[in-house]
Length: 566
Image (cartoon, rainbow, N blue to C red; front, side, top):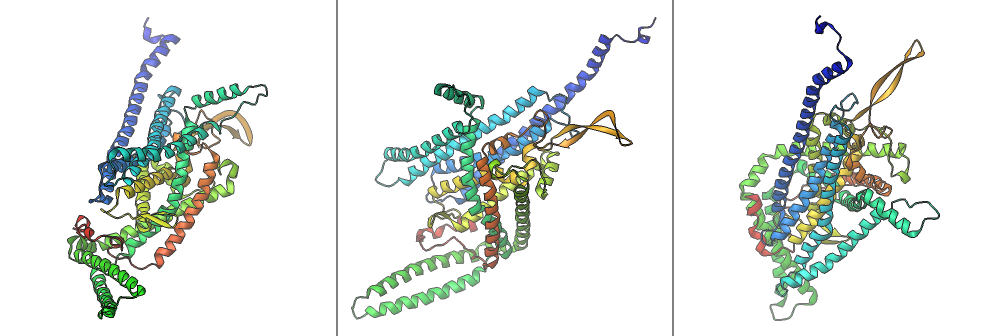
């Protein structure tokens, strides 16, 4: 009797099947680990690129004459941390999407423990980065800023440290208040009438421990993001219209500007000679003439500095190279304005969808699913299936926000209500202004995560995840007993065990009132962009040395153009 002709026992058959399937499962798990490692390696590569970019960016704008090592390191580190946090967004989306197949089923290796481990890894990464951001915003940057603000010839390092730490205590107090509000106020108090005050306090601490401080950290970061929203409305919205149109229109010709500047110098010199001629006989000048003479002399010094700068630019090879690249600048300007219009249209459709289909202001204008689709909301989930295409697009969006924000800050400067605090100029930015600049950019980058959610809510919440829903078959109009499963894109109606929400979304929507504020902020962003677009269209060409020479500059700054134009 041949054993091969006999049917295998059930236990032996199960062992045979397991021995056949085991290598396949191991191979799938190995492939999954390889892909996950690849995703994290790309994130590590992005870290190196971010550090290099921040170093070049800060070095480009810091003053060579007043540069300080500590302020430079602080600015680079703060900006890098913000960009790294934004770079974690596509990794978060990739990881929650990768555990599922395109047909809506979980992959063989993706059990509950593995999924939870992946989620915890991203969550702890966010904890670390957001904690560092709080440290930078409320301790490190204020301390360094006040340290250099109190610096003078008579003070020593010890007194500077004491004064800086005294002012920094106010920021630490604000941080502590935000953490306490986020930790305790939103939590539910037990409704038992016979519970004591001690039991209520104990319940609060138990809830705080069970959430791992998520609410406290989320409230603090959301508060900073709210400030970043204001900076985005002021600087980014204007920069998105000013930068492309400036590239398209170009700058004025240096030779023509130099000729006009020479004529202005001659005119002012004649006015000065006319006023001085009144006192040739020894009579003192009237107060009005003395004031006018002082203003004319200050104006003459500024024009001479401007003339020296224009002469240098007219002869420099860099200006000739920029003139040859003029067609490329026009192409980039057209591309940037198209991207700006794409963002604005997508943001308008997303906000309109919330206005028409959300549950209202009490829910933070949260919508269950997408009713009015927009271009970016369709494009990002498609690109997410081919990693790292969505990573590249998200990085491009973030860098676009950085450059447009920088254009807005350079054109407007840093203001406190009606007072201009600092000017941002290449190679001539003071250490305090550099810290302010990086603080504003840090807050703007924090807000970009919510901006991306507004542009593509489905992508930020679930990525490309799908889940299975039962579908009863019908034959000739009668319901049959056979049941099939069809895949459906994950949305808010999906079961919790079938679709995993990104950790980014949990941080962004922990409190409804922040979501409501972001909703109205998006409308303000669209309005400021349209106003800036009209203003930029009505403006003429900028000067070739726009922002490089001002009335209050010193004559010692004339040797600095070689750092940028040579």
